[in-house]
Length: 437
Image (cartoon, rainbow, N blue to C red):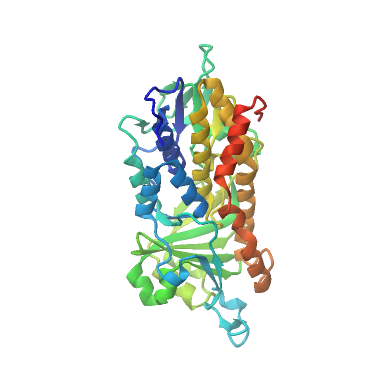
């Protein structure tokens, strides 16, 4: 909630990046009289439209951060359309016909495409899929005119030469900006990360995860026609050899979002998103079963998204700079938790900076943030990559009993976090004199 005093804090911040992390952080900080500027590389707010899953942990974080953020989420979110599937994260099915025996069965009484089990959501709180572009549009409404500067692609950070201890941001257009402190929300290709960790440090640069994805949208009416209502209107995950496919409803159930994953050893193209042909996509799933073939067949104008991730790093902060969200811990999407972790970050960071009364306090906030967020978010990067291997029959092979057992325990630590307790811990570190990197 906003403070009673309208006095600005005695420091100013640069937030680099206007995606979900940057906007949720900025909206919360602005409620608490923090002077800030958002620097966005694009000519305007907006992002390639794709479906993003947000779990109960993200819902709780948004609710505690700001009614504006939570309302924006609630306007956009779409969950499973059937009441009986309300608490299902995904319904798990085998999508790959090569897993079936000679009679077409993958398990006793279960054929390719049949429901094997549901992974149940836990942890309470709002959750659901959002169309990223729509969610950003709603968030932007709460950023006052003049707070954001566009066409500002960060290329470097330097210490100010005036003895102030400030940071000077250097942008691709040749301009500069000086701020007391910088929060890098500039995503997986973060220049703030490169500066903080050092360009020669392998941890400063993302690497190819071995997976890529075709992404697409299918109008819900068409999806129901080809798959039936239950499959189309509720989230599904189809397992297979070195690939998997998932679907979930977005845009208030008007659209079915599709992500079809596959594997390759390396990624040579300098672009991470490339256009491909429908024939190439179909060839990748030619040996799969009817459900998956129908879904792939209905996807128009497919793009391939190479899935990169960050190597582990030792710290998210140095001096007056701190990394947040994907700039700190870019992960593969296999646990549907990357965006939620970014929102958790914003919740903790905003509430720590709310406590700050000086620039030195901001640095203490950065160190406290680093201490409480580092282990959890790094764990997500590791376990998400393992989840992709699980779904692609690479962790336990195609042993469905072991896969189910792993699924049952896989997500609880993400969804069930006590964020208020983590914030208390962070504030305790902040208020002590022992906050260290």
